[in-house]
Amino acid sequence: MIQYKNEQVTVFQSELYQTTATVIQTEEMVLIVDPNWLAGEVEAIKEYVNEIKGDRALYLLFTHGDFDHIIGYQAFPDATTIGSTGLQHHPQKEEKLEMIRDFDRKNYIARNYPIAFPSLDIIIKEDGQQLHVGDTTMTFYLAPGHTEDGLITIVEPLGIMIAGDYLSDFELPFIYQSAKAYNHTLEKAGCIFATHSVRLLIPGHGKATADSSEMKRRLAMASDYLKRLCEAVMANNETALAALYREHAFLSTFTEYCHKENVSIIQREYQ
Image 1 (cartoon, rainbow, N blue to C red):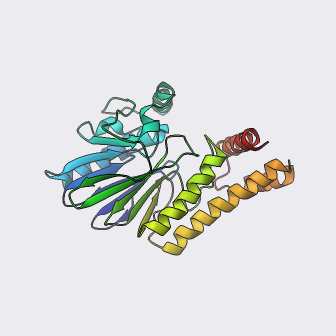
Image 2 (cartoon, helix red, strand yellow):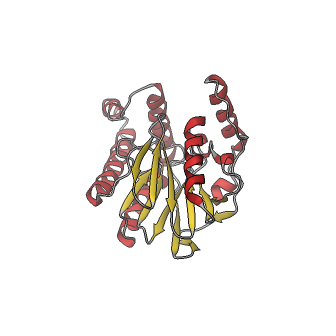
């Protein structure tokens, strides 16, 4: 379904995990971000892109290499691909592809495009690296913590912040790589808000927002949760840890697994 739309931006939201896929159009280009999940959802994004593209250049940006975010890669074989150096050198490419295949097999999903790990045309290696396409400038920031290969992108002059799996309206931090790196990325996000005029924040899961106070609330929520979680782990406070787990939305075996991973990573890094 379409969650958010204006003249330049269309944010699609999957039925699964409230995962977003974004299409941004300017005079010179069309940018697709993380097309996902189900075959019909990816096809709807593809049809929309085909309707609006015309003779403009087509770019495909990946915020990170989790399998749900790369699942629609080969639906756009003519796009110029963009991702981080961490994505280019991802150590578990075949594992991510097998997760896609397993998901499709379990759910009897047939796709009309091959499954492959993204091959990148433009590799982002450092904070502040830019790509200029006509009057559009994309500024990239490496965003490890959730995963090692995370990327935050600012699209100007539209003032769009593509946050990947950070700054959701409901999803608390899932630390798959490093708690210290995650905290550093949150600090970096604060600096990005101070440096750029962000008028629309698009997270990888949840609702886009044009409300600056809501953007700050999300950053504060994630930072505070991570701080309290680290304190509870360091103090070995099981009561506090149980209460912190219950703060997650949509409690399930998945959120339980993610919470245990959070605790394990913090123990490894801080104790």
